[in-house]
Length: 332
Image 1 (tube, helix red, strand yellow):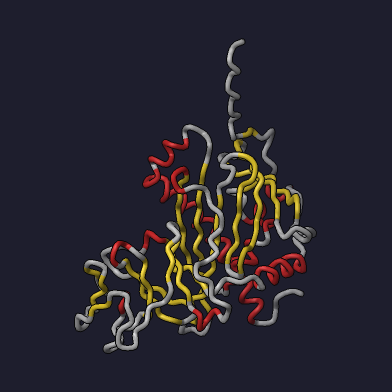
Image 2: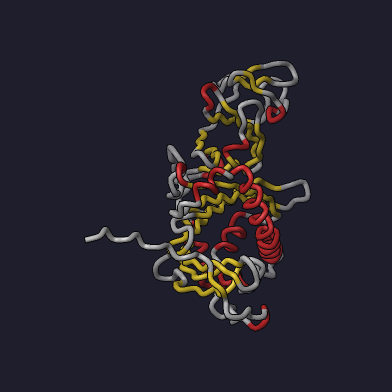
């Protein structure tokens, strides 16, 4: 008896019979209930984060220079210590307050550019490090004085595809809003094909998450006007500042897109700023995906550019929501 032939993989793309005009697609406003979105937002806000905040991409914290970020109005400096470990602490030098984010590093030691004071990550003269964590994709810092929760030893990093078989790209952007406005945007998948017609079509919400706390969506990613890639994806909010989209069926099954919202604090204009850090961790069982991972340095900028186009719209969405909330004009 001859061995069974391997099953042929179907092409991930589909040819739509005919594009539907944007204004003729099925309206989703009845399903996108403000109460439903608000309830999901409140459930997300009640989940613990252990006082952990995303600083930015792991790759942004290089071994030869410091990395600066303000979180909840607190100035943070991060760098690579001995052996490449992530180190984080207050961003002002304990000597005369110099900005340590502008300091170079030498052999894992941060050297203040004003007077040469060196910090190796240990407590010194009132300067005390913050707990820090590098998950291989993102850099995190724990700020117990701001989080106000029971501290966790490490952040709750979502389940991801194995690093050895995935391609990762991280986008960052800043908006005039608060983290809840970013999370609310992600917990409203109904806007996808209406607000981003250049990327999504044929969007159907299969489960609104009211009973399962998991939003399930069937949607197609556009390659051209008629060529699309259909997938099924789940949206979950494991914490107050994080939303995860995971592809559960279709091309890239198991791939995730993590959206993290970090409150930066109030700017000089009196308005809040929020950092959006979106990590795309893509995986595929197709043999050709090995070539894609090999070409990762060329593909990452393209993935970030695509994410940036979406977030140009979505940050406008989040900023509008904050403006309405802050002036008492938000519906409901």
